Amino acid sequence: MKMSRYVTPKIDVKELLFVSEEKSDIKCGKCNELMNYTVFYKDKESYDFLVCKDCEIYLQRVIDEDD
Image (cartoon, rainbow, N blue to C red; front, side, top):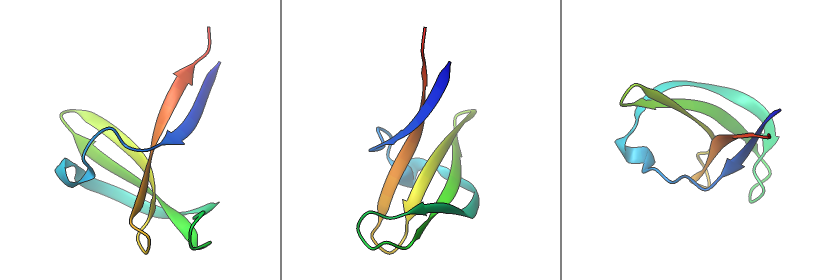
């Protein structure tokens, strides 16, 4: 079973190429505003983030595969 969760990014977001962005239904834990679901790209891989631009918070989505 695949489960996704959001963690502090292990990759520098400034090195990634912006692809797309849309509002999520998840609120920032700091300012309580809706975060953006944002996709970045680098080296033939895409990276999904929840982003709060006001607080400059980036949370990277990782997928855990349960055996």
